[in-house]
Length: 385
Image (tube, rainbow, N blue to C red; front, side, top):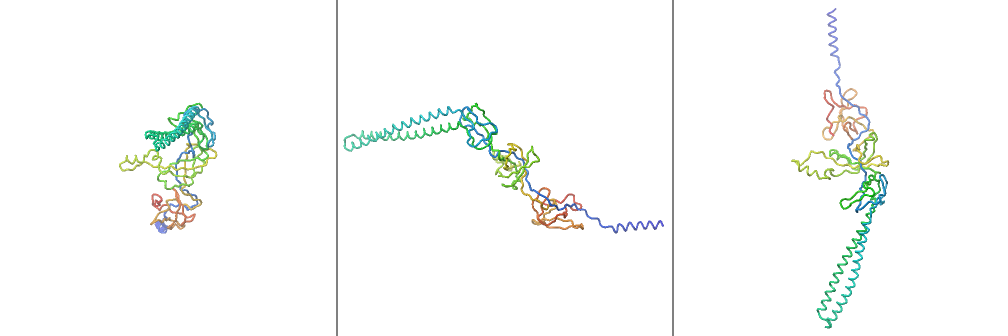
């Protein structure tokens, strides 16, 4: 009995291994799901006013009165400050007096010209009648020509004197400093009673800015520059409100890096390198406009910008490593059926990011795509964006 029992056990074990089903291969899969996807370019930028100017004095003198204070709203043409105008008024009087002198000289010379012209005509008639000498005729002729030349010179002086008067009037007008645009006073640089000197530099009295619309200057890497274009939507956050998203619109992308516009460093770096190229990263400024009706955005704030190169909502998504490129531009995925069999399908793809890819055609929601085959060390790496 003991021997028979042992034989029975051995037979049962052999039968078990013989009849056991082959081991099912284990695939790493992911379901086809519905979701939203964005193809975004991330950048950091600085917020600035869409328009910002330094309002300064174009004449020297003491600031007699300052008409605005920090935070005031001003309109274009509004009086900002008055500079002591006594020197400019005196200069204008001197210029007007000089103009009057030239006018008087001109009138006197015109009378002399008339007299010289009459004398010349008389001498010419007398010479024809042999009643005068040629010397007297030539003297009258020379006097007429000289008087005409002097009159021309006085006419030129009259123009110069009039220009000087006009300039002095403009200088007098410059003593009243007005706002060049609508905006808000963001800084008062010169106080009432201070003296400004316009001969050395243009002295700033106040700084004015439009804050109803702000501009973000975001730095875009050259690797992403072809993915953005004017008119694209964007959103951004600021450090004080990291959970609040602001909407913005890309207005333009500057054609050259900021370093080139400042000091032509592209040429200098190319000359310094032996191959004529530079390994330094290149960034372009993208300018985005954002409404600021509540003045929550301030000048020089840092903005974390997301530029939307593409987006899709309620679309079919699979992990990006599930899609493989084959011959030409065709793309394929492998579907694991319910009976654990693989089915290869050609698919059409859309927007992608670093994690998922949009499937436009070829799969259905709920199906499982294969990410890696049994024995593979890592999920498929066949997808090439």
